[in-house]
Amino acid sequence: MDRQAQAALLFLLGATVLHAGWTDLHLRYVKAGLRPLLLLSGAVLIATAAATVRYERRRAPREEHREDHHPEPRVSWLLALPLLALILVAPPALGSHSATRTGTALQEPLGFPDLPARGPLRLGVGEYAARAVYDDGRHLRGRPVTLTGFVALDGSGTPYLVRMTLDCCAADARPVKVALTGEVPPVLQPDGWLELTGAYTPRRTKDPVNDGPVPYFEVTAARPVPPPADPYDDTGAG
Image (cartoon, rainbow, N blue to C red; front, side, top):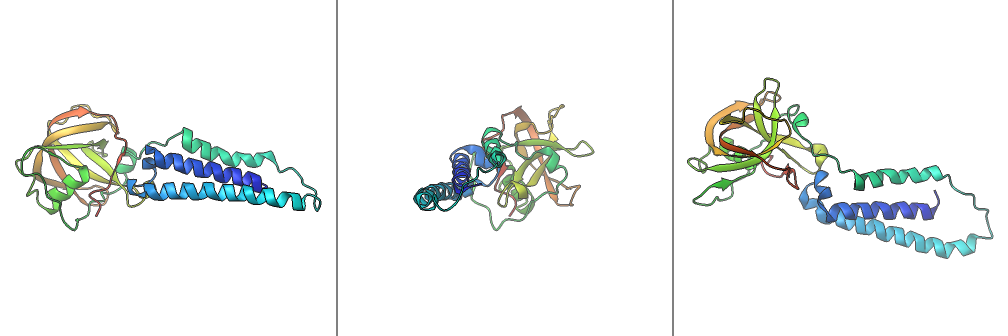
């Protein structure tokens, strides 16, 4: 490819990165906290493309009489297809298939933030799991709790509520699992998102994949909900 075509691809790449950063598309690939770096990267790529075009326009008149120009193969423009696919086809978030084949990522946190003194608690799956296992549910006892996550069923049919947690990006996503007991819906669809209301229970089990600790949650009510804009959970993996 000539430099003009390279500049065009750089511009497309930069615009794609900016589009992902400005919208929720980037949440399918990286942690929300990396958004500023994506926006900066997109701006740098577009600036580089503009500088390349400017340089080529200045260089072209000087070299026009020196060499014959041959057209580059048009097939090289197929390199733009992955960029268009990134914009037009958002990949699904990792779900139950990955969760049931990967051991829980639950790790003991450095500490626990304060919770409201009264009333129901709305917690992330990772935060509930960490408090249930490593704080023995001290601040959860006797409090109604609401969790939101997707359903996963292991090989024996045991139901879990799961959120995938990221260290950096979707490539390193790992699950944090909460086993369900109580008034669990009789029919559960893997990858279906549920909002569960219930309570802490001291019951625990071990993840069948890596023997990691998995707390239980006593379900009293459940309702289906749409997947959230950010399907990943930053809490619970240490």
